[in-house]
Length: 357
Ligand SMILES: [Zn+2]
Image (cartoon, rainbow, N blue to C red):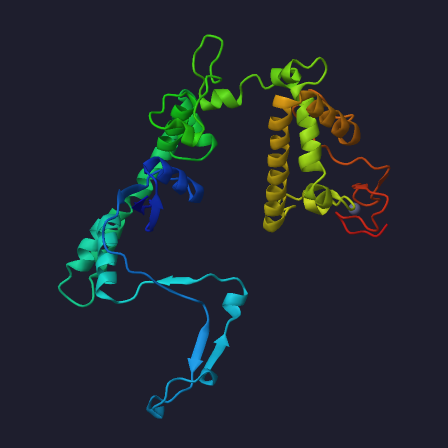
């Protein structure tokens, strides 16, 4: 692990550990688009304080001449901690902390650091500082220009198209392209690698984008391991039914339909609900994949039987080829007398104009 000092295009920077620069790019991408970031391995001093967001008072006169007794310690305010606030980081005034801030500032904001640390007087000249800050903000405009350039070239350049589609830097998009096409040098397995599948009929390596769009329609009808009836889509339907449909998603889906939640201004699923949905689905999917690996190798008949049972119970009449579905406005027999909005039989008032029914 190395400690990296990363300068973002705006006036912020980050200290972060990563295995190497590829890993660093991946970590930065999780927080924001790393286009325009620059970084260096940081070997300077580190001195950071941490404290819990709690206020404690100690009522103990120094002249008491006795060690502190527990009754004198009072916890005054722990509301921040109770509301889930984490431990706070802070930089104190020690010599090492000063050296750390100076080293960070000199790398991240060199023009501003120059004015700041070389000032002859106590208070700094504001117009000089303003010029320095503008100079240090150059990466912001450069990153914006580079993004605009990427968007323009996305028509002809697959790496640029990928960068735009997944909102990342050209550097990282090229890196992922290289992994997908197997031209990435180094230990491929760490990132998934290439096992020879990513080739088209001419033996040419497919790019990441090409792979994600590769024979999407054809794949729906491919037999599962040469099984006479079951297709990959049947398997996918059973997995979707078991893993997603019959999990927490079912609870979210239950209840009366409401046009309120179709308003794009409102989220239909809260953040914690999304987290629950993803964690529980992933756990069920991992278990399914475990059974699949286990059974397809040793007892394929048992796996086919599992698929048939799940299909019968949960995904019997599901579509076996469609790749999309249009969501149209609901159709109910009744509609609102004043605004004509279709009305569910159990609604007691029109959800659009609020007129009672
Ligand atoms: Zn109405």
